[in-house]
Each structure stands twice: as C-alpha cells, then as structure tokens.
Amino acid sequence: MHDRRLQRAGTLAATGNAGSANDSPACGCDASFPLHLPTDDPEPMTRIYDEDLTGGFATRAIHAGQRPDPVSGAIMTPLYLTSTYVQESIGVNKGYEYARGKNPTRQALERNVAVLEGGTHGFAFGSGMGCLDSIMKLFRAGDHIVCAENVYGGTFRLFDRILKHMGLSFTYVDTSDPQRVDEAMTPTTRALLVETPTNPLMRLTDLRAMSEIAKRHQVLLIVDNTFATPIYQRPLELGADIVWHSTTKYINGHSDMIGGLAVVLEDDLADRLQFILNAAGAVPGPFDAWLALRGTKTLPLRMKQHDLNGRQVADFLAGRLGHERVIYPGLPSHPHHELAKRQMSAFGGMMTLELGTKDNARQFLERVKVFSLAESLGGVESLTNHPYTMTHGSVPAEVKDAMGLTEGMVRLSCGIEDAEDLVADLEQALVGI
Ligand code: PLP
Image (cartoon, rainbow, N blue to C red; front, top):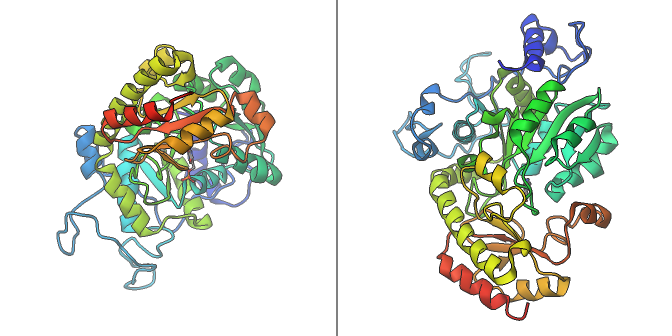
C-alpha cells in the first residue's frame, strides 16, 4: 500500500469502522475520502489472477482473465445470460448471488483490462459516463474536486449540470501547468481528475507530476485513459489511483457497444467501488462485456496500426496545412511532444485540425468518403467530427473559447484502413481549404 490516505482507510476497514454507514471517521484524523462508504458488500470484488501478470502485452490481451469454461472446456468465455444464480442453501453458493453484483462474462473483461492497466481490480459499467458517475459516488456533499479544464464535454456536463447541484464543487485548471494544479488544491479537495491526451485538443498532462501533487495533498488521482489505452500509457504505474475508460472506444474497437471500466490497485478503494457498483447498479449487460472482451484480444495489434496510420496522416496534413494547424502529439511542433515521448510509448491515431472557419469544417466533413462524420472514436473505421457542436456541444461557448476549442476544428480518429486511402480521402476533402 503506497499511500497514507488508503492506509488510513484500510485501518478503519480492518477495525470495522469503515463498514459503518456513519460518515464521521473514527480515527481522530482529518475527515478524509471516502470513509463514509461501507466495504461490506456481500459479493466480494473481482481480483485479477496473479499468474496473468506474466507474459507480454499481446499475450495478456488474449488470455488474461479468461479460463476454459469449466462445463465444456470452451476456449471463449461463455455469454452468461442470467440474472441470478441457484444457491445450495442459505449463504451457500458458488460465489455468485445476483448478476448486478457479478457476472462471469463481465468478470473476465474486468480482469482482462485490469491486467492490461497493471491494476488488481476492474469494474465494468454500462457506459464511460456511467463509470465516471459511479467513481464520483466515492465523494460526498462538501467535497471539492480539481479537474482538468480540457476534458471530454460529457465529463464537464456531468460535473457542471448534475454533480455541482448535489454538493460537490469543481475547479477547472490547466493541468499542463503543475503549479496551477497545486494552487487549486483546498483543504476540502478530495480528487484530481485528468484526461491525457485530451478530447479533442490533444493536450497532455504530466501524470508523474500530478501524482506527486495528489499525494502531497492526500487526494485521489483519477485518470481518463480512453485515448491512449493501456497499450500506450499506464497511469497506475505513474502513480494514479483510479484509471478509467470509455470502453466504447479503443478497448472494444469495433463501434458495436457502449461501456466503461475503472481499474484500481488498492483493495480498500476496490472494496468501495464494488459497493458502489452493486448498490448503484450502472453495470453493462453480458453481451456488451463479451464484445469488449473480444475487442481487447486485438487491442495491441489495432493500436499499432492506429499509430502507424496516425503518424502517416499527421505528416501528410502537416505538409498540406502547416504544422501549426495539425494538433498531434507525435509531431515535434506539438507543445507537449517531449512529454508525449516520455509518458506514452506511441502517439495513436487521434488528431485535431484547425481549418479556420466553420464553413471550411462543414465543407471538409461533407466531402470525406473513407472517414465518416460521426460521434465517437477508436473504432477500426476512420471517423471525423466537429467537436464544437458534437462532443463539446453541451459545453458553454465561453468555456470552449477559454479552452481554445474553435468552430473551425475537426477531429480525426484514424482507423486501421490502408493509410494511403486515408491520405487520399483527406487530400480530396481539403481541396480549396
Ligand atoms: N472519456 C472520453 C475521453 C470520451 O471521449 C468519452 C466519449 O466520447 C467518454 C469518456 C464517455 O464515454 P461513453 O460515451 O462510453 O459514456
């Protein structure tokens, strides 16, 4: 256990105090997170199989969390379409009671992604936002959260339109500047939330620096790793407490389900997330979990191709539009290129272009043929969108202005088609721009 916050929570859990719904810590220490949550969920949480930690990433992606079906030997994890499990007697069962709490198909996905992220416990949810909403239930009215100013629009919407009215308060800061993050901390701050690279401005945050600040202020560091995936960036290894994903994106990779997943290292935090998962119940159906699990088998392969295509497309666009109009962490002109090289093992397939005006953006989006104009990202097929009105449509104009999001921007999610076809498509869509 690396962290005093959790040691304290662990001590309380061991003495039984943390299991009480009473929200005043009994340790005489400062009121801290998230001791008000019980850890006595009847369904014990899912933990990775330790033997899955051996082997390289491609091997882990294909095998972690999965064992031949005990009934038939089926090599693929069966789809457990059941809401409940038959019990032998009162309190005597096979470890499963009710499928909101646990489902074997879901558990295979949870263990698989937890191993890829270098964590010990995974928690799958019905969407990325459902996942974040459940994570935020670790906190209570009066708690303060420091959040990167440049996050997915839905994250801002959840905080600003819902959780703010439930007693949580938020300060949005430029997390690429550690000093500003440090200055935003208050005695009631309980968490620091970052997304790196960000959607859609592709800004990076130094996770080691964030972890140092979070530990000094005894707050949780929560990282949205949707864009980079564990193949290119592992926040838990850099000191994060919770890493989460919209599995809708690269983890699934085929644009055929919606899901979210959180991974942690510490048992105490996992206990509380398991309690929330079961109590609040924002869980995915088994088929969506199965689809995401099938997706992770090819995640390392897919990410390699997304990255190759991303680099090729970015090089073409930088030559065509000028470096300053292509925001891609793999380009030396990107302000966080050095950090990207240090913190990520590759740059991926996401980038944003500045086309100058909304009319230019519209013309480009109407002309693309291999790229499709659509919400979402991270699938095998190339997508493009207009972040100002789409991903960030719910963010007030003044907030978008402050973060530097313009009406002339378009975002590209480079798929794994032939790079030459992507370049040719962009070339024809940019004629006259
Ligand atoms: N985080 C990021 C970076 C995203 O891009 C998205 C969705 O676009 C989400 C979270 C939300 O995930 P979901 O759409 O699965 O709820």
